[in-house]
Length: 322
Image 1 (cartoon, rainbow, N blue to C red):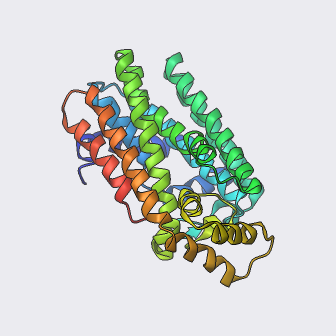
Image 2 (image 1 turned 45 degrees about the horizontal axis):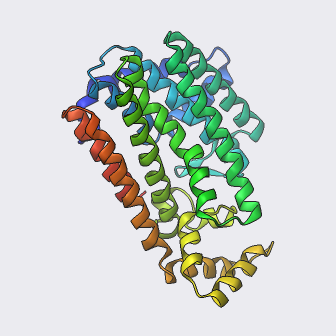
């Protein structure tokens, strides 16, 4: 237990129980895949944030736990679908659902999780809460499509990147931290502040993920270093390195990026280019700026252990190593 989870230790126990219940299915194959997915469980960032935000506004109703289950199921569904889109064979160091079974079953399992999450959200009997998650899910889908588009177009503008990140990553984190205040019927300024917190935290989190693609360890990441580049993803360290590079070097890298087939040496050249032109360092600075925005947004909350944990979540997101 650490600073992030200590204030909600009991709620997380209930979350685990209800998550297990929500993953049960009458069809044995679906239940088998669900059990496998439970073993791939990640950091539970979104449900943790949802429960902390509820505690931070003094909301202790068990509907907050159901809301946390719903957002985690949506996140899990998008991860399964992501792996299918990316043809990823591994997830957190183990075979992805699509690799362990099939792409077809992975898509269907993702659909099952989304529909089960929808049922849970309807059960909250809160149209504002349902609307917040529905809008986030729509934005998330658009962000995924936008990521593919900017990769195909080699669109290296910061505006395109941050618009994509806002939809793809920050949207569900934002909905997660707004669920508690919405269910508690908190003041609009508090709900808006938590929205600003989630947006900034989600952006910082994605930038940190981009950085890890260049600095992380393949064993701890569960995926090869530099894989985002190979999958055609345009990330902030690359964008910032291109902005800082002399024109001849930038033109040479742009030509290389347009090549359909690259050797391992050419992929390494792209990674080296980003490091040599301070792309990683510049991206770290931007992540820190968004982290500070997230911390300032929390000033709308009264001091509490839950608020301290939300502040710690910002630091952990930016400083994480995997």
